[in-house]
Image (cartoon, rainbow, N blue to C red):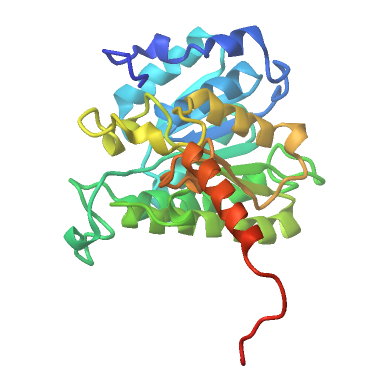
Length: 325
C-alpha cells in the first residue's frame, strides 16, 4: 500500500495500471495471443496482477486458489476486461488437487502453455520461537515449506505432460514455460524469515534443476522472479505492517517500494518471445534491496576523509620497507 493511502483498494481499483503504464506500453498487446496460462495464487496480490497483464496481452487465464470467494471475484474482474478466465478451487500441497486443476484447465482451453507458481505463505517469526515441527507448519496453519516448495514442485510435476513438446495441444518441437515466484531473502540472510528463506532457496533449486532436466528433454523453460518489497500486497501487510514499516524503505537502493505491475512486466518478458533464450534464471526485481546495507558513514564525511587519507599517504616516506620479514 502506498504510504499516503488510508484505505484498501477495491478489486477494480486494484487492476488499474500505474499512470506511466497507460501512457507507455512496454509490450505489444498481442504478445501472448493464443497462449493459455495457469496461475496458482492468481486471485490476489502479485499473482492477480500477473493474471491481469497476461490476459491483457492476449492469454487465456486459469487461476487456482483455496478461497472460492477470492477466485470468483478475480474471475469476474478479469472477465470484465474481456479476458477469457476461469477459476478452480484447489490446494497446491495436494497432488490430487493439482492434477485435477491442470486437467480442468486443459479441458477448458484445450492446452496449457504457461504455469506460474505464485501461491505462497509468509509471516514474521524469530528462529528461537520455531520448534522443529513448527519450522514446517506454523502461524495458524500457514504451511510455508509445503506451499512454497512442495506446492511448486507438485504443480510442475502435474503440468509436465501438457507442457512438454508434443503434449496435448502442443507441437512436437516446442515446450511450454514455468515461472516460479521466489524471493531474495536467502541471498544473504533476513531477520525473522528463516522458514521462508529455506523455502525460497528450495524453489530456486527447483527452478535450476527443472530447467536443466526438462529444458534438455522436453524444451520446457523454467525461470523464476524474486520480488522485493511490493506495495499493497498481502505479503507486505504481514511483513511490514503499519506499526513497524515507517522506515522500512530506507534501506532500498531505489528508496521506494515496487509495484505489482513491475513483477508482472518481468513475467511478461519471460513469457514472450523476447525471453525465449532464458532458462534456469531467477530475476531479482527488488530495486537492489538485496544488495543494500546501512550507510554507516555519511557521503560528505567520506569525501572529507578521502582527502585527509590521501594527503597523509602522500606525505609518508617512500622507499624500501625496513621490515625484516
